[in-house]
Length: 114
Image 1 (cartoon, one colour):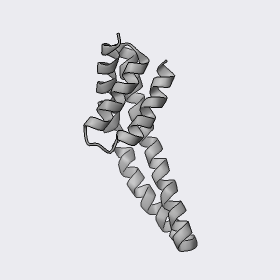
Image 2 (cartoon, one colour; image 1 turned 60 degrees about the vertical axis):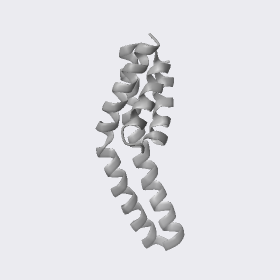
Image 3 (cartoon, helix red, strand yellow; image 1 turned 90 degrees about the horizontal axis):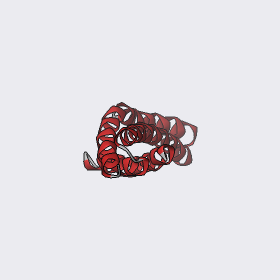
Image 4 (cartoon, helix red, strand yellow; image 1 turned 180 degrees about the horizontal axis):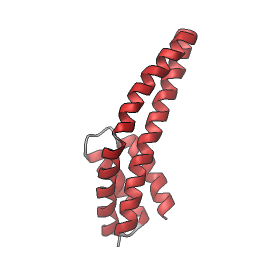
């Protein structure tokens, strides 16, 4: 159930990660509830936060390049990919923030379902 918790938590982290503090806590809580147990919940929450932020960075870089290519040709694809990677790098740096909040939420969720 740990793997399922990490996958569901990572998807929830991509969706809810934009909410300042509550989003990562809720995503970690969901991962912890699925993983069952305080230690496993904390691990699932941390991994979901880290993986979720990496997924968001990859998606933003790809979307920037795609829309830049559609609307601006080769130069637009390069510029869009660059802008997407800059925004994605900001999310990548924030992966520790998301991971720590996911860890706290996961520990609480795991303790609730212990």
